Image (cartoon, rainbow, N blue to C red; front, side, top):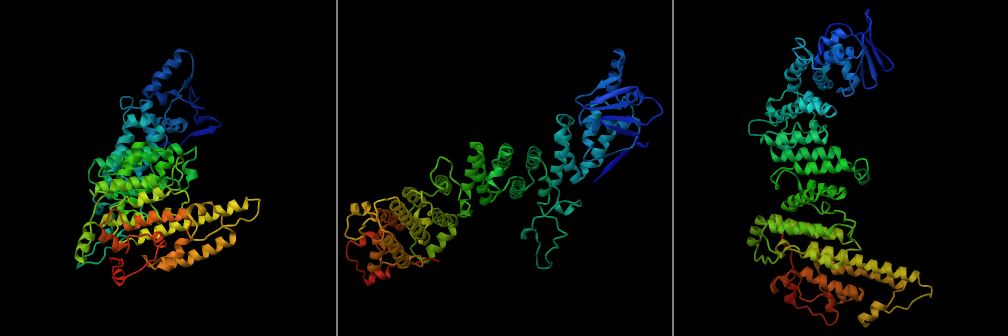
Length: 573
């Protein structure tokens, strides 16, 4: 850190409580009060450097008083002491942490060149321009001190000059940087230089393009915003680096826990921070930040109640790169007005916008006819296929939510076109999880009803010949429930093997019969989802092997011809 020493006389100030005195053979003749501190000083050295004190002392003499009040002195008593010592010619040391205060105090006291040559304003300006603004870290330290000295630091253009100094240095060619900087993140492979004749460049000797990110993270959000705007306005910084800078700042200042995020002390600050980060995102919405980071930012924005425009901006950006997300990224907690555990409506909105951006209609009817066409389709529609897999995995994640409505499950599963789901293994897995949850919820509900029934045991008929109405009115006994759960686990292995449905009549009959009538009707709906969205007969037979649901098969005899076996669905790798 650079510094400048002023004056040559030894420091003769000493303190007694809230009073400051000067060791001198001459008696003091003026008292200057700054805040709660009284300075007992001499008129002559003060008046020789300060035009303002000349006027104030003259006014005090006219009213027969030797006290002068300076209640609004910038920097308070500590800073006035620096200015007073300079007037006495005593040694003072200026550095990045006190130079702005000295500059503001000198301006307040009007310590200009017409009062005395080589006055404090002149010396401070020389120090700033020739030394501190040329230093990377000193520029940041100087800028940090300006917040407590507003509006003086703003009016003297100290803030603006600091911002320009920092922004200019971030756009310098990394190979010419010779100053120190903080870099604790891992270097990416893009910073390694490899060719036929040279080895990988020594990482300790190379300077990454995002070398400046961590140092400016120490700025408060208002100053950080100004620096980032200045950096972006120069038009030389890559959008990906801007995105990395915003991510690093968010990680640095946003708390990890929801309690800390929503605490009364910091909620407003966190809201301002998130909204500022969103407004600083690269203008090109399709680049700059990973989808995972944007989704995490959206979660926080929803929790703290960020402005609608900020959330809408995030949703639009996420929809442009939804194919990069993971299922865990999409697990956004539902709002208080929603019954489900996660905000499924928001995910459906993201999928809808993604489809609009990709110019893919919901009635897309692309059929993969041969291996060559399949390869061409995968190469040309990678994002669409990724979203298809993403939604199936997301459905599997939310399927365990007992409050997830069947209609919601089906709507989301049908929100992507058939072309996005060339194989249905992921969807079948989600349906399997959903049905298990449904079954165990019914088991738990039945157990609760039985425990609260004071009349004793209930006779429950589980015969497959019962009508739907009889089944819905009946209450299962504990032993029967345990037996059913055991049978469900056994028959589930037959029902789904390696992601393919096996249509063996006897096994399906036992599996489906375990489901109460309501569950069987739900299964029929989900079976239609598994077959696809309005595909032709050929596609249905490929994916399911039959146009009938398993629950409808149990009503009649199931026969499987050799040709049907050959037409079983097969995975496309």
